[in-house]
Image (cartoon, rainbow, N blue to C red; front, side, top):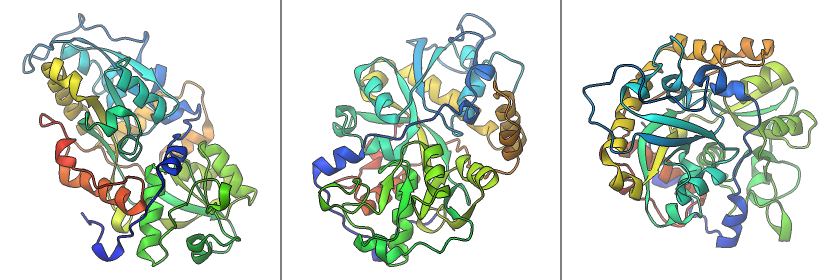
Amino acid sequence: MPHPSQAQRTTVQRAEGQRTRARSGRVRPGLRTLSLGAALVLSAATVSACSGSSDASLPTPDQPDITVGVTTSLGDVPFLMGMATTNTPGAGSFTKAGLSVTVQTFPTETAEMAALSNGSIDIAYGEYGQFFASNDPLASSGQLKILSAGYDATAGSIMMLVPRGSATPDYTAIQDGSPGASIAVPSATGPEYLALAAYLNSIGSPISSNIGMGGSGGQNDDIKIIADPTVEITAAVTHQVSAIVLQEPYATLAQEQDGLVPEVDLASGDSTAVPLDGYFASSTFIQKHPTTAEDFTAVMTQLQALGTSRTVIEAALRAAQTTPSHAYSDSIATMQLGTYPTTTIPAKISIVGQLMDDAGTISSPLDVTTIVNTAS
């Protein structure tokens, strides 16, 4: 797996106030077809730990009742398959491990991090870049830990897209803040921004330190933050921006429903197979409930293995469509799904930290060995 080269590194200095404004987090729109939702997960919000046979290979959890936060994503499909009560692969996995899991959905990683920090949820699923760059005390104090890997990029899963017939964006204009070219991303700390920064670095047009700050106060506004991907697509279609960067499934939806065309596959080069999402907990939770943390990680290892089957994931996505969408159904077979790793490898996670350091979304390098929980 490639690692950002020193030749491509760009030291980007941001004022802390600028970083704070950029970290408001993306908005997760209500397209719940992106993850399994109520149709596959539950007939009630909680799967009871007292039904079904237990997994004798796992220790008895010291805290059976846990709450897990999620955001709308393709990456949490294996987890939600384990929450299902239907006769599908992985269904009932947490119950068999003696865990009673309640799922809570959040509109942004920012809200989810706050809930994890104040203890209203025990585990959170979300993007590495946004969690690591968070200003929340849990992240800044070094108490944030990764319990399980979640989702990695693959070729075509992060794309720069332009309206059909449009010229290639002027990357030099983006570099120096000149007018005439703009690229939209959902957040200033998410994988779309990191992959874009890595690409621009690789072609010799590193973005400026003021990128993504909305243009106020004379700052560079050629990278625009549009939190809702559907609004981002509209901005491209109506030529409000020169290009947009999207993850799947939005990249495929933008092409098949809105006629945008691929300009650059950003899940390549330094961003090839970059880890995108994971499952987080506080060190306090892990210390208080070590066997619960161990059991959750073990169950996720089993569920993540289901992600090696494209057929299984596609079936889960189709079953999740509580509001049928023919256009989305057609896209399931053509979208470029990422991968669902079964182990959390610090060397892989360190690539995220390197990309963040290069893009200026963190003020100092991450020590990933202290972030990955040793049991994961």
